Length: 123
Image 1: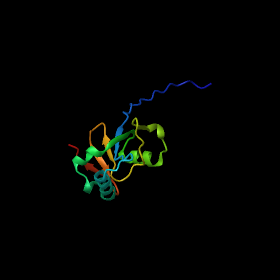
Image 2: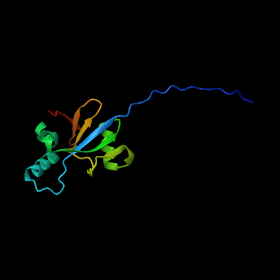
Image 3: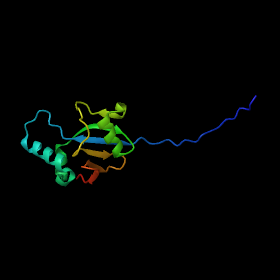
Image 4: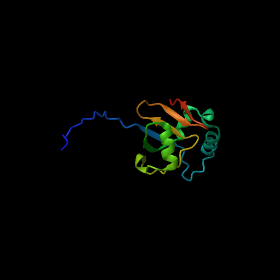
């Protein structure tokens, strides 16, 4: 018979990283200014964004993810829906150029750009 050995593995608890997702929601509106801004930001990304534009964004979801890239994957592949919590009354669409993420730990904001994420300032 083999002796029973107890092995204690020290695991450090990992804090759950959360990101808030902000998107421009039209919801049937016929607001030409909002539509034009959505078009410009969708085509040109952060180069057409200024902090006053944040007023037209709506928080649509909160995601549990380690990185912004993970949020992008979660909201495009929808492969782990339990990590994406929709805000009440909102129906987020796939994350795309012009959408904004807020790192809830640091308070930093970033916009989905053509090939990466651009750091943006919200005043």
